[in-house]
Length: 84
Image (cartoon, rainbow, N blue to C red):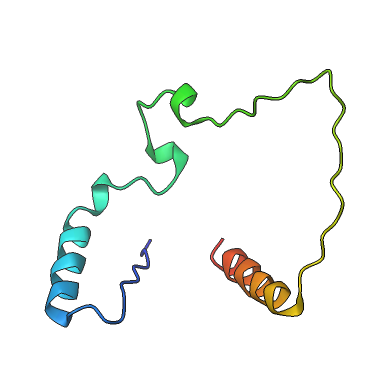
């Protein structure tokens, strides 16, 4: 499958071509999924929360965002969902 690469729009076109050529030439060294990282212990790549299970969870008070921040948040979430 083809991977999408986005570089800054102000990057010199010659530099951009060099970077793209280098990355495409080394595409096999990148890990795109966890399954691609063979030989790495799950202990190294697993996140664990340090919580006391004897203490019940406490829900924090909801703090509503102002309209500008709420709109920016909605756009960012939509972008992340679109990109998977």
